[in-house]
Image (cartoon, rainbow, N blue to C red; front, top):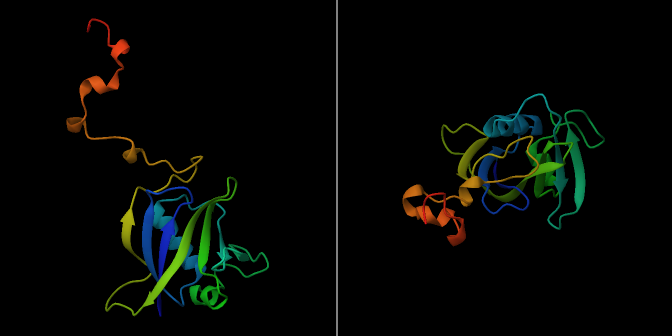
Amino acid sequence: MIYKYKASIPGSKVFMREYEVKGETSLYKLHDFLQNDFDFSPDQMVAFRGYDEKGKFRSEYGLFDMGDGSMDMVSVEKTVAKGETTLSYVFDMRKDRVINLTLIGETEPAPRASYPRLVAEKGRNPEQFADKYDDLDQYSEPMDERDDDSLFLDDELPDGEE
């Protein structure tokens, strides 16, 4: 079975990814895929936190077993079987920054497709060590659509331009 997940960053309306993952994929393999997809540093501690459909914390899976199993021993289908419809990928443990992977459905495998795979994306990748997710593209407009004088208030014209 192939599970479809929507990735989002809490507080961001700009960022979105959609992934398809085989049920037998270990959380470690999913972590490895996400790490490469987001271009994150490989030398950082990470974890997955499992939540049920009501948002109640159920499990935590780390690189080492923290009581619920290690990422290499737990598959995606095991988390689904436990009722964990959201997996929070904690990519910055110090600042508790996460990307939420919410289960949005199931599908049949596509012929010759490699899994996990990215099927849709919006917004730029988050920076792993920033304080929060900022998408500067949402604040900028193309130069040809901007009025050059709009950069200055009426009483703030550059020297020599009055």
